[in-house]
Each structure stands twice: as structure tokens, then as C-alpha cells.
Amino acid sequence: MAYVVSDLGRRRAAVLCGDTETDAEFLLLAADRVRELTALPAHHAEMELSCGLYWRLLLRALAAQGWIVRAGVMASAADLGVFGLPADWRPLRLVRLERASEQTESLTRLRDLAEARHTDRGPYLDKPIPSAILNTLVRRSTPSSQRFDIRVLSSEDDRTRFARFIARHAGRDFTHPAAWRETHSFIRRSEAEAQERGDGFTFEHLFGPLSPRETLLRRIALAPITMRALRATGFPRILAGQLAALVRHSPAVLMLSLPETTADDDEMLAAGQLLTDFWLLATDVGLVLHPISVVIQHADLLARLRTDFSMAGRVFFVARLGYSTQQFPPSPRRDPAASLRAL
Image (cartoon, rainbow, N blue to C red):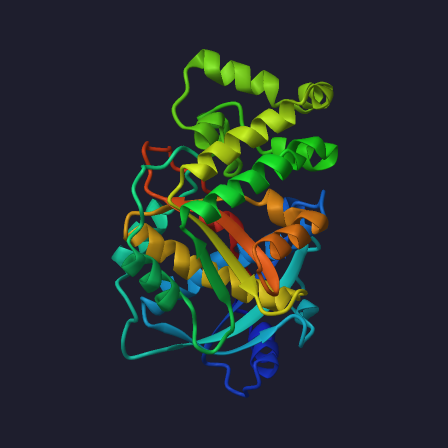
């Protein structure tokens, strides 16, 4: 994130935003190439989605303090490299912010929701989600100006079919050497290491509370060198079966899609903003999510998913949805100052 403060930078930003005034405030969003996942082509879209999540939360926090976006330009429509960005930054969007007379929501409430939002990979309560809650989530998180499809699989038949799909195909997560090696590189040995690095996750973040022995077993079993040796034994299918069991006993599966089968960076950024609103709304009513990314990271699995579940367009997010049964530790967060640069 860059805050445009220099006179030259503000003049350039004003022109790019189609304005001659320079008394507003300008922010530039960029992706950090050093921290991007690259092992699979689909990881690029996931990074855009993550940036959209961050961007939407930031803009909502600013709006809660009276700062509203009045104009903006995407990197696809303008050269945002004119600001002299760090070499590892890939610019995504520039916006012009102005003071408004009213705040859009409570900043304290938004902060509480953002801190409570987390990924819960554990089992969920055997408790159906009322249809009224699901309908409200879909209605309130879908902007009228943009076309997204939000589908919730909540019937026993649909959840069973999806669980079978996971059992057959989710082992791919562990049999792609480069992808698993990259994923595993973000597993930290301890909470202290995770906090120091400001990213990644521990085994407790992945599996909930564990004994030292359980942690050691997972560290050995999931190491890339071990996984490579265990591929021929059917171990990835066992892991896929365990995930399928979690899916089968979850009250709902969420699928989000765009209308077209292909999506550019701008659309994925917008999709991430939609996901932010849905996730925060879900958190507000006591629900948790567990993204199941493997089914959208491989082109053949994604095509089969669309066919088997009659999903039109580009499916960009799939997750379990339900009520948590255990308390997961909060994920480590980077120091906000590490992500902010003045231009």
C-alpha cells in the first residue's frame, strides 16, 4: 500500500484519476511479488483475490472514518508505474479519497469483526444454518452493480455429492510437488516464529489444539520429502478422505463465481471485495469458513466441478460453511507499517 504524499506524485495521481484537483488524498494498492504464490497458474488469481480482500477491508475502515472513494483507476487502464514503486511491487489500483460528512459504519464494530474473522479447518457443529440467514448473507453481500453468483450447497444430497468429489480429487493438493513444497514453506515451527515473520501458520492454526506428539507426527508426515515418498502408498487419498469427511458433516458448502469463465485481474480484485463482505457478514452471525482451494487450482478439476454442480462462469471460491466446535488461535499478522510506503 502506498500513500501518495509528494507534490509530483499527487499531481500525477490527480491526472490519472481524471481530476485536476490535488487537495484530496490518494492511495495505491500493489501486490508484493516476493510474497506471491507462483507454483500453479491459478495462484495468480488467488493473489488478486487476497488483494481484493485486503483492499475492501481497508476501504471500509477508511469509510468508517469519513473517507470515501470518489474516483479510481485500475492498472489495466493506466500506467501506475509512474510513481517510482519498488521493483517487487506490481501496481493494481489507484484511488482518490475525499472527506464525507458521515461515517458509513462503526469502526470499532468493523475492527471486532475483522479480528474475529478466521479460517476454521476443524469439524463443525451438527447444526443446520437457517435458510433465512443464508438468504440474508447472499442478499447483503451481492452488489447490485456487479454480477456474481453465490451458491450454497446445504441439502444432504448436494453435500454428499461434493464430499465424494473431494474424496476423489483433493489428494491433488499433496501430489503436485512444487505446489505442496510452496504451501509447506509457509508452515511455521512455532507461534513465536509465525509472529516474528508475520505470515504463514502453525500446525495449531491448521488443525486446532494439538499435543506435542500430534504436532511432531504432522511435521514429519507433511514434510515435502515425506509426502514424495508416501505418494505411492495412497497417503494423499487418505488425507483427501479426511477432508471429505469434514465436508460431509458440514452444514453447507459455499461456491462463488463470476459470470464469465475467464476473469482478468480487475474482476478478481472485485471478487475479493465481494468475499470480504460475505465473510464479515458470516462472522457477524457466528459462522466460520474453511476455503477448499484445491478444486479451483487445477484446470481439469475446476472444469469437472462446474460440470458436476452445474456452475456457470468462473468459480473463484469454494469453502465449507458452518458453526465452529473449537477455538483456533488467531493467525499471525504483519505489522501494518511494513506494508505501507509513502510516495
